[in-house]
Image (cartoon, rainbow, N blue to C red; front, side):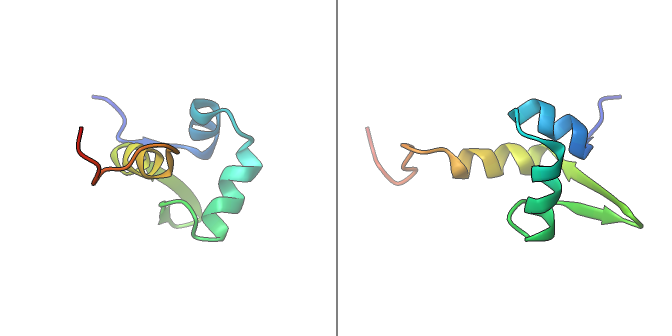
Length: 64
């Protein structure tokens, strides 16, 4: 079964930033995350959507 979440380390590697930045974004509620006890994880589908929203140059209301 595929994992449905990323750890902070996995997400940092995926988007090529530091793990510290991932935790900082989570602390500041700038990235969607799930807190389970002391652990923070990131749902893959939610992160993919968040990345699409952050992408520069994409206007979802613009028609081709």
